[in-house]
Image 1 (cartoon, rainbow, N blue to C red):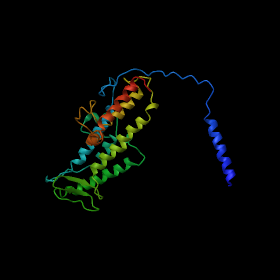
Image 2: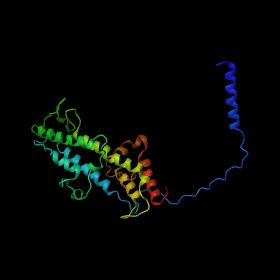
Image 3: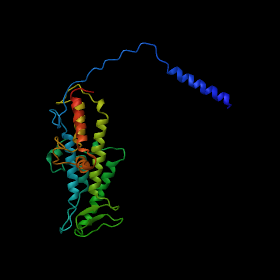
Image 4: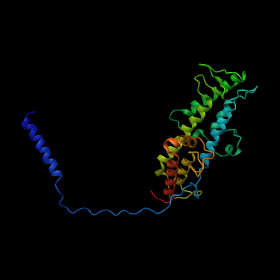
Length: 272
């Protein structure tokens, strides 16, 4: 390209830019008045009159019973060791055949399996893990006070501080179930509900609340904290316990709680 052509292109570009910057002589468009939103206060606890996150709390309790059952094999000094029933673990996952010690869970009509993400087929893998855990518990029970696991061999590892049942790769069966369900069920459901919150109806009240209120409550329930958290840290479960363990470093407790409180207050006051 010649210098003259280059100069011409630059000059044309400058004219376009200059023209676009010329003062607009038209009268400015009138501003659209902003309608103020509803006035309301945000509470300091999750004590909303119609709050209901029982289903989330019960699913957390179901996971608690599963991990307690697996942990029963973590013996190191007893002459006998309990063994696991793979079908019982699978039934607890799908809430079948009344396997929970808490009768209210057996009759709750809810389960963990149907709320678990199918993206990474975790539910299928978990059932395989349950079967493997049962075999490992039977093999370890033959020598209840001896380490039976080794590289490539499932069994029990006994150390001065604890005993754990592990698979052939050294992963704890309890941790696989606990952390897996925390992610594939609790976190997955909470994020799905929050991401879709604007698709739920917030006009029709049914059984004490709107669909949007109930969805938000369920998501809060999966956080696993009391309604007056973080002032009250009693009985923290799963994600609530994790958040509290890192709060000193990243100050997340109040931030997360405030977000849940503000969101629920907004929903109840029709503040989109």
